[in-house]
Amino acid sequence: MDAESKIITLDQLVELAMESDIQQELPWSSVSIEPHTAYSMMAAHVIDLFEEHKEADREIVMMSVMTKLLVENLLLNLKIHQNNN
Image (tube, rainbow, N blue to C red; front, side, top):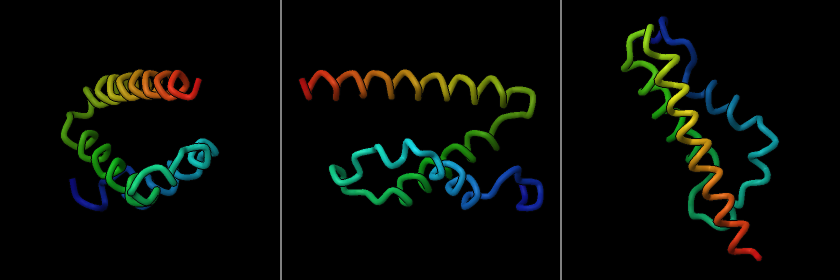
């Protein structure tokens, strides 16, 4: 996919993702990666996933990826909550 046919640039996707209020709740001080670096790496992966699938399959692939990430996030948050009690 060439630059002109891209739906969003990496920088635009990172900016949108980092606008969320949730980002400020994340414990960045407990890890050795900067927020912008983490968002850039994950955004690049998302763009790659999006671009490697045919248009007809993209919605299903993206919904399955979002579901997987939400479940992983839920489990990690539960584990963190249990460890803090």
